[in-house]
Length: 78
Image (cartoon, rainbow, N blue to C red; front, side, top):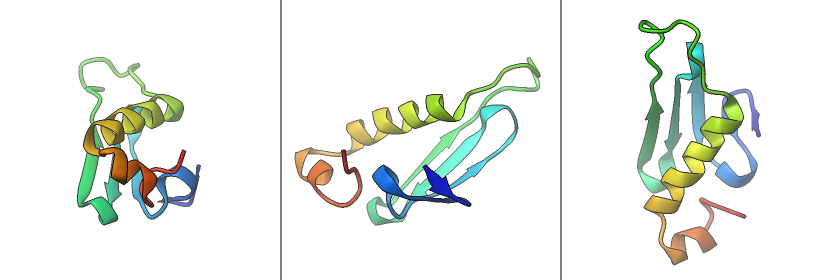
């Protein structure tokens, strides 16, 4: 969940922006990480990625980025 464009909860300290058709960018300053998700809405204007689907993508990326110590730290709180 986020308030405005600043994540709270499991993505504490991250910043995110959302664009048309499910295009997102999220920065995790504490981890020196930026995640960009692009959808080709020029090819198909009906394409879309929901916010819950993007959150799943973020979880997958963070799982790949983080080792066991990272997951116990302040970036990913489960």
